[in-house]
Image 1 (tube, helix red, strand yellow):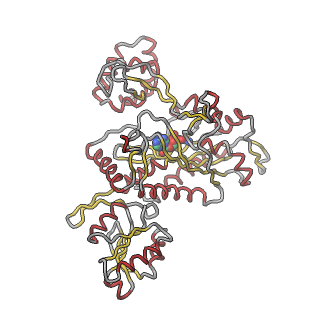
Image 2 (cartoon, protein in one colour):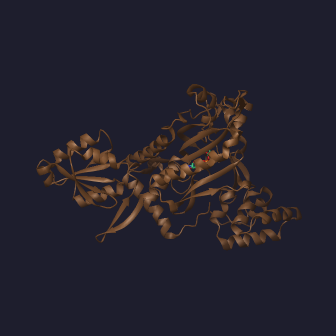
Image 3 (tube, rainbow, N blue to C red):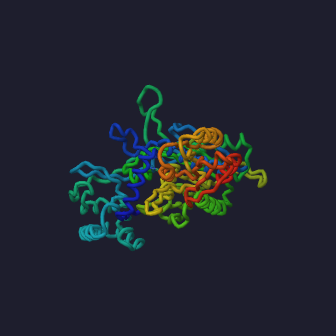
Length: 496
Ligand code: GAP
């Protein structure tokens, strides 16, 4: 992913981070101690938004007959991660600057070097190559034409990377060519079970929730008596010791995933893969994400993960560039075959229609709850001018909005607060609402616009006469009068 941050776009992210803190969406973890890099806490509005995203995903996945839910533990048998390939492959190549000791991921170093500088580095590197490395370089140039792609591909090749790094400056202190050799760094967090900190007692915090699903394939299939094709869905925390955390919630060390593994007959993999691609894009679209800010990025065959036959990313256009919010993968029978091999337990499925046994293929949809949170937040953020004044408004889909309705008595007398409190008590049995009697109504509207509250209900003089209230819609700012008796039904319809 390439980030070219124009100043005004960078400002948008800064504004959103600041709004997120001021309004109680997201705080830095352990802020009073200076923060912990790559970890974030969700405040009173953030936790509602996050829960609503997960709830919508859960309903879309499990309120259907062919998908079952699961909640597997974070700590798993260490053999799981050997079988999955994470012990061997879940690594990033790292280098340290010998001068300032800063550590960098080799494959993303190019992101912090401008075009002109890259050209200079590549020219100097080409001049000093051995014949053997010239041949390797030629094979890279045969595949990639533009400078950025070539730079990236050179850094992905261990032999070439070390030579190229001799010509590069440290992005932190500027020192030239003082990097250590690239070394592989495993991204899994380690800890120990029991009181003895030994190799035998080492376990990992799961870097993906998927493995909890794979190792429970037989349990779920047997207990639910599902037949193929069927899926298992899970939401849960995952941990990765990312070297470079960046862009707010985009790349963090602790995050939540919403993963669904769909088990299919191997001969039907392509058809299910295509169906799930479409369904997942529609899920984002139906929750208000602008279609022009969404796209698929299909992985070329030479960039596929070790387990995948076909893969695509659902990408969102963040202010800093396109970024993956979900991965959709045809994982073949890689995972179940490996677990069968490492555990010695059969992972075959008996297809009683075909009268044959086979290891199912898996189509995976793997969304980041925290990353989607950021995409929904960015997508909702709008600055508008209303009657010569600026308003900041979060235009969340009503289903995702942290607070569904705010209730205002126009003035704090004449029985209006009492009516407002009755409405609050009634509505809060069904949805999160907020009662606010402080300040001018215009200011109360603005506060709720910034919270993303889709409806504001005002109790006014007319309410005392005919038991109607005004309901103001956040985006259009239009107001309608609704009888207090019909208010709940009115809102529930709008929240559907
Ligand atoms: N089981 C497959 C898997 O984990 P992935 O592409 O590595 O695939 C899936 O991750 C999703 O998890 C990503 O699309 C992203 O939304 C989220 N994700 C991955 N690493 C993340 C991180 N460091 N911080 C936040 N979200 C992350």
